[in-house]
Length: 196
Image 1 (cartoon, rainbow, N blue to C red):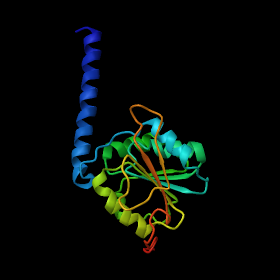
Image 2 (image 1 turned 135 degrees about the horizontal axis):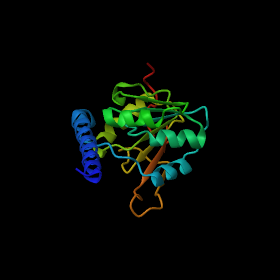
Image 3 (image 1 turned 90 degrees about the vertical axis):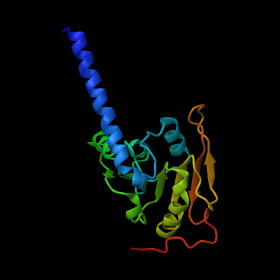
């Protein structure tokens, strides 16, 4: 057997194994993610978000469903913020941990963000399915403090009024990014009523 054929078979085996792990990791969390799949946020979308939402180094950015952690790393690099990501997909979690190794100020937790209190977050970033946005809005209203900002890619939070809507300059990734500021984006609602 020639070296080229052997190399091809090894590469094909590695790719097949990687794809199989991806499918198993995704299928294992479908009940929690309600069908949402791990996909990386395009860098043009991350840059548009970072341009529109300036941050201070003492602030905490929380990424709900952080995937491979690219939003956490980009935010930490640009603004020096403390960055916390939640991820339930084992493969995405491992990728985020490996890619963030050696970067101080980034923490990735293999936890479902629905069971976590987000009261310490100054900025919440999410790229979730539209069918969970109403429930997410209720959670954030109950837990976030006044002044917190929420950024949602592609899908708005029902009943909230965006402070700003940004459209990245991209033909493939130009969908809306909704930026909210509490309590202004949620008039008539009590913000931060859950404290524990």
